[in-house]
Image (cartoon, rainbow, N blue to C red; front, side):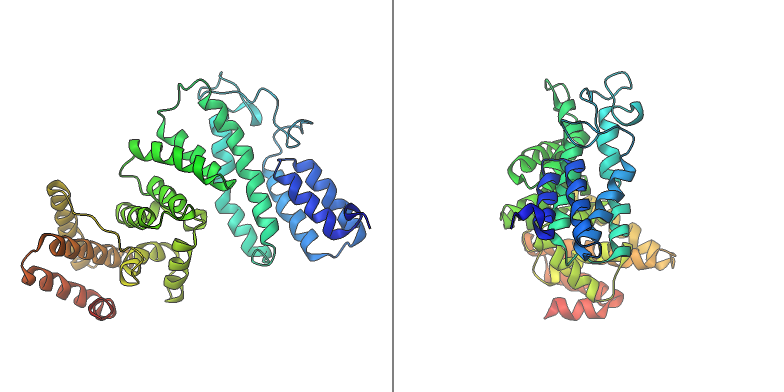
Length: 339
């Protein structure tokens, strides 16, 4: 039987269309499959996912060339008169809008369930969305005048990662990180791509840095590597969620040996670390209403300080003093670290 006359064949045709990307072709194939079996769970699920995105991106009419709905002159540049896509917005805003919808999409997936069962659908939709956003951002790279914009480089790198081109993603994310050396989001994306390329040592070091700099700036659901996703699942299994989860990940990353690649602190960095510890200690003593976030943040800094003492051969008493501070805050972390 012709594969395109079976439900399974039409589903695969839809997923292949999404990767072109050709949303209209995918929707047509799924509707044809629905005629054959109007209760097929994967077809229903795929149509729900695709319809969710098309509803949010319906500001443009569909194009025969792209199958999605962007005009041929999507445009380039950051100002309003440098080309436009959705509702006349500049290309950068269009690409950024698409990527900004992921958090809402994750909530949608949680409501309808099934994302673990229909991974092929999830990956095809992901490829479609990121390749669509990439089209806008690539226009801006154009003749190279925006090659030094770290935000644009970060978005391009994220898109290449989203479509599975990890080598290109690495190139752009490394460039972005050179401009944003102390940005947790950028470093986490770079770490994730390194992990996907099996550059495990670099990934571990970069994740450790990212979660020290700004845990709350990292979107775990945007990560793809097993290295960080498994760690996040293990910490989640301990009962942490939401913002707390992000603060505890670096602690258990250290305790479980995931964040095992460390570096020696520069003198200025050591001074900043001690100052941040001092500020956090005062906040914790003041019974701040952010205690559930401050305590793991402080413990993480204690662990960095202990690593520094070990790397520099400091007096054992300094390490012991810091360990006792951890014991007061969380005896379970203290015992696990000791053992």
